[in-house]
Image (cartoon, rainbow, N blue to C red):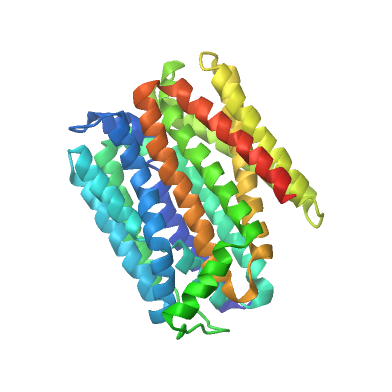
Length: 386
């Protein structure tokens, strides 16, 4: 791998980290702090969480197609500008509807598919797997650190201060994109096909049976993730742990899950165990939800359920993209990735709206029960994929 390729991978990893920090840091704290905004209720809190994912769904394919027409870099910068504007609106508002507008604007900058396409174009084909793995590591580290620092920052500066910091991170990502990223194009992609041809190609990917199953699986997993993040902050507080101590819990859980996932990847490297591991992970996902549901008042068992969930989730997040890559038509990797991303954000959006609705009706128990039911679907789907 050349120095320029390493330079591009490092730069894109930093951009991913800066942007996704702004997405992940709000997850552990939004449910608690949004209730102080004017007009807030359980349902609107869920909308504020889920609207980001829904806007990603709407704009993911248009941004991907636009990046084929005018280039990846301008689209990425434009998406980051939208994300920064939305973050600042969320930072200055005192009304739940202002937060919803800010989160919607954040979500409209749907650049994840463009970033991945830029990565694949900037690295020789034989290094694609290494490049994707490097970005995956960046993503995992960002997720773990965001879960830790989100509650710490919010405890120190409040929710408004957190969104101001997210705005700064987005601006830094814009600077990195503009100055540092200079992609090498081994295989330039210029989409000059007419709309009818493009529609036909996209339709074939949407109707690919194995890809449908994989996309449905990631949808279910991300729905469960957001349901948990709506329930977990309140559940942990009910167990007697103040919000300021949540980062300690998340840090232990995240470090343990990262080490466990690393050991699993090392042990299974070069072995064709992907299908079996996916079934095991989905089963652990179900077990984790069952433990949390039945031990809401017992913190040791509840935290065990949390730990199992994040181990299973991180492993699934590593496995499913590799399966998507294997099933993708050779010339349509970017389109396939964008549809996969839509599945992720559809799960985020539906999980937020469903979780907010359930929170308003019956509270934490019903949210965890719903996650348990969805985890059963995940097990069934993993058997079908095998």
